[in-house]
Length: 129
Length: 123
Image 1 (cartoon, each protein chain N blue to C red):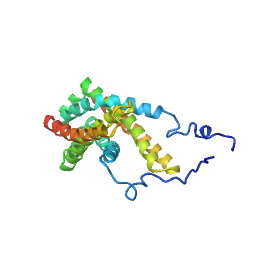
Image 2 (cartoon, chains in turn brown, purple):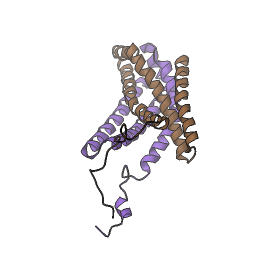
Image 3 (cartoon, rainbow over the protein chains, first blue to last red):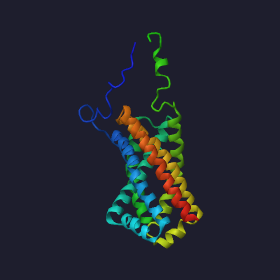
């Protein structure tokens, strides 16, 4: 009978590099995780900006100055792409959760839609805002 | 021990210890965010870049303020669940528990600070 082997199990990502070749499906999957978790930085920046706006003009000047500097602009631009990418990839997961689209051709198509769509949405948003 | 079946031993020891609740919460918050995120992107995007006086007036209005508050609350609950999945994949033991707790604090902390700021701007 199988016994529990706590502490002896290999931890992810032990498969990467040696045993596993990256594919489009796995790259789009890990990008979902990276974009989702990296957006904590964006949230903290926006919360700082809101708190500064509530505090007064001097505090706002500091936070707003950082967010609108070239570095802040870069962070916000990457965040915008990350947000759209994570949204599209998340919708893909919602579709998968219903049991649909799990075959390889559909998975690939949805992966390309997430990559292409996120770039298009990012550029559209930048144009509109 | 030998009389306990594998199934009995595995019961209740899922990824979160809460069965499917975690996954259901992620599903509900992600559907909500599909609606909230575009609304937030375009309201926040239109506020960013304005001078302080205008930002205060803009976020004093109900629609942008409520969208921001909802996005922040639902977003941080979603983040809190998502980051836990990542931590559980890449760490174990005490490190895992400490990281999950730290991220819960950061998630609710950020939401609380943001809500306080929005309330101050509205009042």
